[in-house]
Length: 104
Image (cartoon, rainbow, N blue to C red; front, side, top):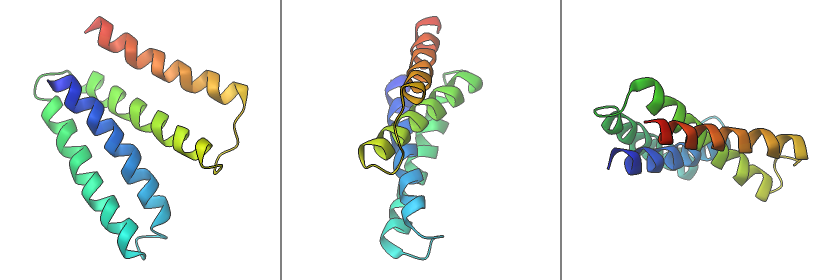
């Protein structure tokens, strides 16, 4: 169960990161609210997962999922230009997250 919560928390990390970017320094109410709610859910899930999973593993997986999903969103919405090198590096992050799950 901790892994499911951790993966979900990583997804909420991507949500709050995107919302923070759209909030214009927390001056736009709707994205600011999404940022706050997603941040709370993300951190709460991380805290829950860390009750049973090692801190370092939890944090690396949480950040890796959040970074990968944030990058994917940015590429799909044409905010971030895509390149073979960037895709290769993000696939490396995903491989590392999977490796940590396999080793745990």
